[in-house]
Image 1 (cartoon, rainbow, N blue to C red):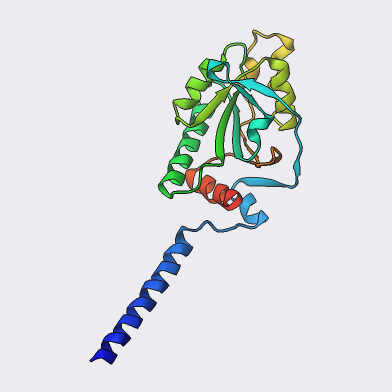
Image 2 (image 1 turned 90 degrees about the horizontal axis):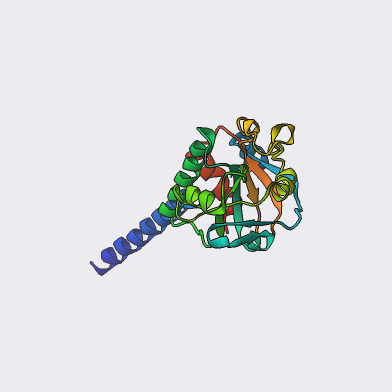
Length: 213
């Protein structure tokens, strides 16, 4: 009888171990190949690109510079608070991504989400930060004058941020802005971009593959 009980205990331990490994495999992000990432919307550069220092401002005149990129994976999106459709749609997808990651207990301590306004003439730091936090409290919205915006945007291949005919009050250039999502690594380097169309499942798959600890 003791022998039978011992065998049953060993079988139970074996089953629990196998189930644990199976569940762990299901919940652990899979590392995708470069081609798999591309198919799912994330284009990674062969070599990360260096960017120069910058400074933007959020609520309460809080500075956000290249130093704030260090030690964190940063998702950066260029949009504006008066954007009619693309910006709110993309920001909503990012908010759903963050919710999925939280539900999975994914490590978010070294992750951040930044919205840079491409309409600094109308979006104050307080305006854009409030707009960003309307999608998620952890989102950061930042703004600065156009020369600084142009410097960073050019380095990150966001090339349509200049006003038409150099008229600061002409906002027609905002209508067709680049809608990619920028990814920067914990060294503050530009490593790639997520390309539209965006979906929570694809963003979650690619984001976890690249940023898992």
